Structures are given as C-alpha cells and as structure tokens.
Image (tube, rainbow, N blue to C red; front, side, top):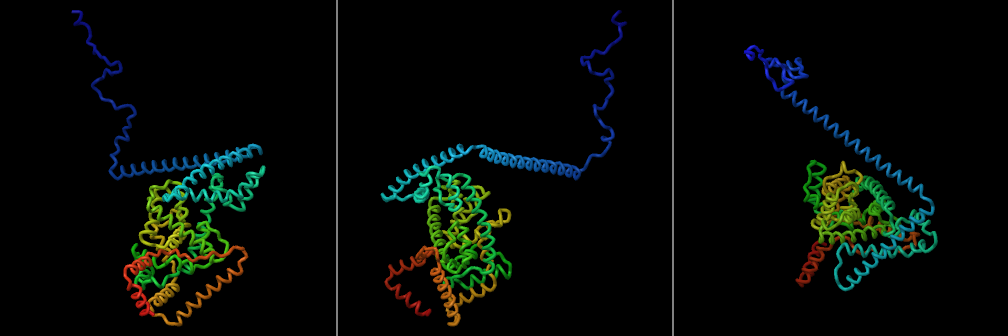
Length: 471
C-alpha cells in the first residue's frame, strides 16, 4: 500500500538529460536566420571554391616569396659573415691560410703528375686513352708548363703576396690546382658577361653583313626555296630544309670571309686570344674548332651519359652552350643535339657556335626551343642585298657567270690577300704568323673519291674529262 501511495518518478541514467524528453530543441550556436536562406547553386559553389583556391594559391605564392626572401637574406648574412671573418683575420693568419692553400695545391699537383705519368706510359705502350684520361693528361701538361714561372713566387719568401697582382695582369698564370673557388667563379661570371656582349654584337653584325656562301656546293633551288619560305610566305621551313642550307656555309669559307670585328667577337666568345692579325685570329679559331671536333667524336663514342656533371658543364661551355641556371638533364639534351647536328647531319661547327652566340643574350625566358631554331634565326638574318649576291655566286658555280663578274670577285680576293700581308708586315707583336694550311671542313667526299680512284684506274681520267667539259 505504501508503494502505491509513492509518486511515480522517472528513473534516468543521464544526469544532463532534460525532464522534458518529448520536446526537440536546436543545437547550441544555431542561427535561424541563416537557416531560412536558400541553398547556393552550383555556380555559387564553384565561385566559392575558386575563390578559396585563389586564396590558397596566393598564400602559397606569399609563402614562396617569403621563403625566397629568407634564403636571400640568409645568403647575404652568410656572405657578410665571410667578409667579417676575412676582416677579422690578422696578417699572420692570412699568410698561414694562403700557405696552406698553396701547399694543398702542390700535393694535388704531385698526385696528378703521378697519375699522368702512368697514362703517358700506357699511351706509349700502344693503348688508347679514353676521353677522361686524355683530358687529365693534357691538363697536367699545361699545369707543368705554368709551374716554371709560378715556382719563383713559391721559392721566394713572401712571394705569394705578389700573386694577386700578377693574376690581375695574367689571369691564366696559375696552374689549375692552385686556383681557389673565388677565382674560378670570377672567371665564369666574366665569361658569361663577355658572351652576352658578343651575342648582341654578332646579332647586329650578322643582320648587316650576313654569312658567306660556298658557291661550289650551293644548290640554287634549295637555297631559293628556303628564303622564299622564310621571307615571302612566312612559312615555317622543315628541319631538313634548315640542315640542307646550313651545309652550304662551310667552316673555312665562313671564317675566311668574316670581318675583323666578327673574328675578335668569336675569339672573345670562345675565350681565345684576341691579339694579332686576322690570319692569327683565324688560326686560333680553326685550332679550337679542330679540338672541339676531336672531342665531339670521343664523347659520341663514349656517350653523353658517361660524363659527370662537372665534365658536362665544361663540355657545354667549351662549345658556347649556356650552362648557368640549367639542370644536368637539360645540359645533356643540348650537348646531344650538338653532337647529332655536327656528326650525323654534318652541320658546320662554326655555324653552330654562331647560332649559340646569336641566342645567348636572349636569356632562358626567350631562348629558342632547339638548336634548329637558333640555326634558322642565324640564316634568316641574311639581308636582301647579300641574298642577291649569293644568287650571283650560285650562277657562277653553275657556269652562267660572265668574265666581268669573275674579275670583280678576283679583285676582292686580291684586296683581302693584300690586307692580310699588310697586317703581317706592320705587326709589332714579334710573333710569327702560324702557317694555317689545315682546313676545318671534313673531307669525307674527298676520301670517298680517293677510294673510288684507287679501286678504278679509269676514275682520274673520267674526272679530268668532266672538269674539262665544265671549263
């Protein structure tokens, strides 16, 4: 009876539960006015997502800019720290530091001499050296030739203090083992600035004077068709057309007809000596081109992938290719393109160097996609007047020129010969002009004809009869 008289009470396990379990209340923070608004459509959602992505992109750009600024400040602080450290060094500490540097260079040179001696014995025994071994041997021989005057500054007490003054006057005085990183970077930056200046100069002069053409190998139809596409119709020539026209510009004929400012510019671009007569400048360029051609064959046989990053940068720089700010993969691609054009398609190396110089100062942002485009840009710079002169030379090659035209060409060549002789006589350098009798152009056709004459005894008679018919 007592249990019946007690009031019924709800037994609840949740102490936070409300006694009014039948009623539904909104969650905390619910905004009824916002809930009454209609749902946004797809366009609004896309705009919101786009705005969100734009904000994220701006945030990423801001972070990247802040990171770049932080890296720049860090590099600046590191450079300032190095300067302060160098300022804090006393005179005795500087002398000890320089002495340690040259002592390490001497030990490195001794190690290279030991290695190169083994390579010389290997070559004397009849074994063929690889490209890397050949470069090692040549570098050691050059260092030993420079060591004779350099040893005076090492033997004389405190003579190394005069080395900066001598290096200012003669940059290539030091052997390669004694060069520090600062000197090497200074040479690289100076060469980069020089090549930019030469690029602007050659781009201007090529537009004014153009390139000389070999009338013996010029083909009238191919040449005229190429310039018709480039100038008249604006049609893009094919790679085969560009390569065919490039073969017309032979190495030796191109060098023999370049003006002195252009020869000096090419010597500066290739880090060659710019003093002397035109004949000496042409000899230096021809000698460097022959070295590059031998190196091209060695790299082509061993493969571009066999080169290390340092060797790859050195090979590209020797050919006038851009190296600053490019990845090793891009350098391998550019070097492989050079080798293919030079060895597979027979494009003259002088024209390849001119094409590299033509586009060097344009920068990475506006540089051409391939070497073919650079070659096309150089060929397209020939003016109309020179184009008409080349047509006349093509007629001369075909036997349609008159004796008057031949006489004018003969007078021009005689003037060039007299100018070279006058430069040779008035030269005050004291150095004799080298005998430049070797050609750069490959002689595959001449070798093939020689092989035919050796196989067929009647071949020389047929060739003489053919020349007599042309005459």
